[in-house]
Length: 443
Image 1 (cartoon, helix red, strand yellow):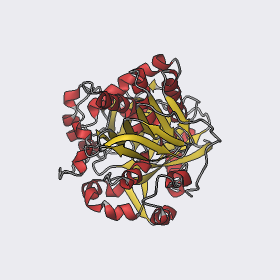
Image 2 (spheres, helix red, strand yellow; image 1 turned 90 degrees about the vertical axis):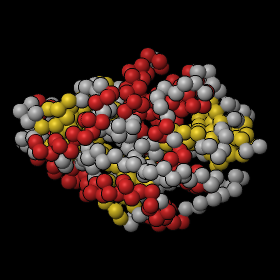
Image 3 (cartoon, helix red, strand yellow; image 1 turned 30 degrees about the horizontal axis):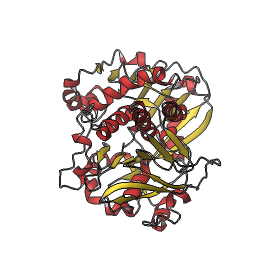
Image 4 (cartoon, helix red, strand yellow; image 1 turned 180 degrees about the horizontal axis):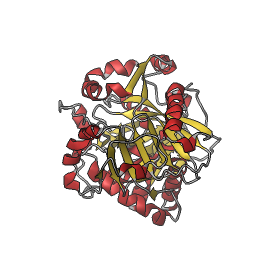
């Protein structure tokens, strides 16, 4: 269930003023704070609950270039380089390791679904390569299934979600950022049409720039200030096992299964491409925007009317800045996992890899994914409100790409030459009549 949760008591006071306020303490917000602080920009990050306690700390932990929408690949290549630099930058271990990622197919003919993607990303000189039927077994030792081949990217890897966000945020603090947990931002004020201050539950902060990095909460926040931000939610779930000699290295997925090696000796295990989608008011409000995505991904979506459907019907859509907001009512969303999906994943995985027949599950984790109509994020200024920026809608790809997203947002705010072309991530694509293009990757 979506039980409202409260953070531990936090008596930090907000500063009277700063240059930039970041709304949201997930990995994208923390990374943005890190790179702004690295540039010497005064920045305060406000998190309504606890750092990294929603999707940022409860995801699979993959850090991948393979399977990305081609529009994301340049930013992801940058992110991969930055992941490799984070430990040195912060003098701390964020759990990033390069161990390779593999996609498996049952039949050789199934490889054809990846051909168009391989052609599109050829210009980026990735090390992703085809793996034949005779060779694929080395990436799935002990498997009872004879796979038809797959794709492998040796330079992809993973990081540990439960530590990465917090350590990146603490690294930002060492560089001068202010990090305030248990501090919901209700909205902001403007003067002459420009950002002048934010209003938090702990007081007002004068500032020139606001970055909305609120994950699943971003659409609600944007709507409260009459900014359209089409975004829906899908449920992602994964199991965390106790340490086990599973022999599998790195990350991999195929029909009916997925896994990720963990640094504690266990594994993340789950089901590939199976997501519960609750029908909520926004499902109808943004239906037209999501038609391309529905055409490509409907098989992976399990639509339902659940508790969150009724919760969102009753959730406030507007509030006064001197009143309690929904962000204070719902501090941390910890949804109930899709147990039927995980039960089937357990059956599939034990049948496929007998060495896991005695695996013990420590935890079933679940989180809501913020998904845009074209499944790529918004990393952009909002043209109608000078000083207001949005960094959201990472569509299940945010953990891996976060350092690159933080660097790009920093460039946009400071006016530096952007590290990659920001055009694909502009907010205006959803309001200026641009065609919404959803890449049918099929991964």
